[in-house]
Image 1 (spheres, rainbow, N blue to C red):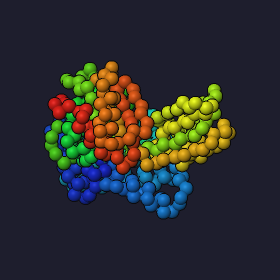
Image 2: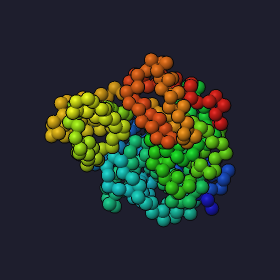
Image 3: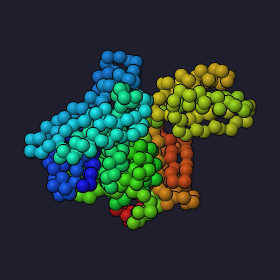
Image 4: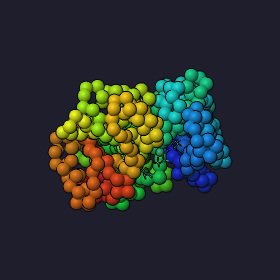
Length: 408
Ligand code: ADP
Ligand code: ASP
Ligand code: MG
């Protein structure tokens, strides 16, 4: 018998009515396919944000272990409620936390990676005709510690389960009908894609398209698990994320993404000598922080300016490290700006098309939007712009660069 994995996001289980709707949807799929059902759920609605807010009212110091303990409770509420709703419909269902489901993860609080899933228990429960409902976003490290997988991590739980249980497809049910050429809430004329490659989806997700967690895409790509992103609230077919060799059509550009979780740091008048950049970025890396764009400007005197971006959440910690290094290397000043965002365009088909970046810059220039930093790779171009202008930037870039006949 095949295993069918379905994941339902926060909005999909946001109210008791929606939980009942999801229960009916699961039973319909089970009836239609005859498959064994493994379900992953997120915390209800904005529960995770509310728990973070609650913690900030008790302490201004973030303790990652206790935060994970707290945040993992959100998903525990939804697994039990969903099971109760399934029981109401007369079917067997059992809920499992990440710990109970033996989802083994690294001991890195707040952004652990899944290492392995011991599936014996899940398989036994499925063979006893249970619908197995598993808490997303959490795992167990070192056999005792509850860890979470990073915001949006329930997608990764679902894909890792689908891969471990040899399911061919992992259904990700959410509040939009699939993957669009941009966030449809920000770019109203964004178009739904019929399919998108792992490579492009990983880039879109990493660049801020929150519809899928980047690690979920990584995992799907490693195990060749097809992801079907679709809406909980409509029966329409959504978007398939799969290997490039399986795509029917290859679009030159697949989408525009916005990342508002960006901040910029600049070191002014850094002495122009070997080893300075290494010292700075080694110290930041040793702290466990990821640096994204880096620009070093050339100046006529013996000094340079170095600017770089980090996640907004890391700004305070990285600022402290940077100021310490700045003092050691004799740099004049460190300035930071959290009022920025990154707008990117992604497409495997843009390789070698010099015109794509130029068109993007022209679209921004024509709209009077200043570009503060640029980075490019073979399949993406990203620009740092003012936070207040990023949504407008995404719309103008989308208008100019996404063809109206993009394969949907
Ligand atoms: P869930 O709670 O179901 O995991 P998320 O809020 O994490 O849902 O992700 C769905 C949201 O992702 C959508 O409501 C949409 O606003 C946003 N989004 C961003 N970029 C895209 C995109 N390219 N295609 C579809 N949705 C996108
Ligand atoms: N509840 C978690 C979050 O809000 C995980 C998820 O929804 O995927 O980030
Ligand atoms: Mg999500």
